[in-house]
Image (tube, rainbow, N blue to C red; front, top):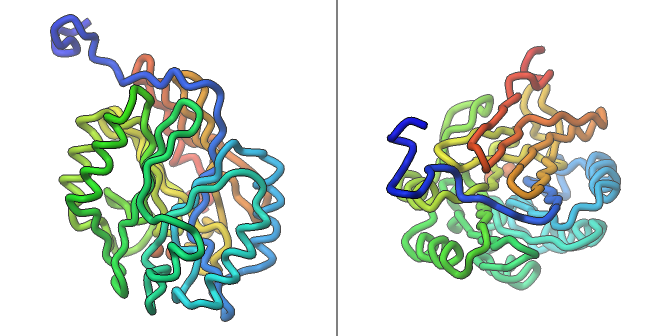
Length: 279
Ligand SMILES: [Fe+2]
Ligand SMILES: [Fe+2]
């Protein structure tokens, strides 16, 4: 082994998960709306697929509504009720519009939290601010990330709406969180194995250092990009292995795009084999 891959006696591998089998569904950008933004038929199809998967936990990374309106929150709560099993929800920029930031806790609970689920610590963070599309976490949430990481020996999964690095195939690269550098630094130095994000309405995943950064596409918004359609992610965690699968809701197909073995750091990324990229 190259000497640079060792630090003292510690072999310089990824922090291991040792998690028992766990299936996460990662969905995002539902965009409940009474106008044209929400596709109810797609939502119905998506929920049927999602419920068949029988995930241990459904992580929803924001934009449950389009305008943050009371009627949209009511619709979102009703629609989320159709999802079987346990869900965790964080707000997106759209949910904070029109005083929607006051409605979110009323409908879906706390916007920033640390939960323990099975052998995993889950940190959910609101990266949005009222009536702004830009995202920012800030020092308070950075402290929450560190608190979640050091709370116990369990590996940590972090979720927030905006993206911490640019996402390809999403047009002009706006809305990367304003404090992306500081956030990335905390995530990478603590070897957080998995970060979940949404916002750009396209699926994406990439490993940086020892962290897998994963974006979910849009679950049921009509604003899809090119041939990507509506998608969600299935994330299987089995001991040291993370597998990310993208489910295309419209044609009911699925493709494993990433397998990451934390025991040896090997990561296979099949993102560029997604057929919709090659059309
Ligand atoms: Fe969105
Ligand atoms: Fe968004």
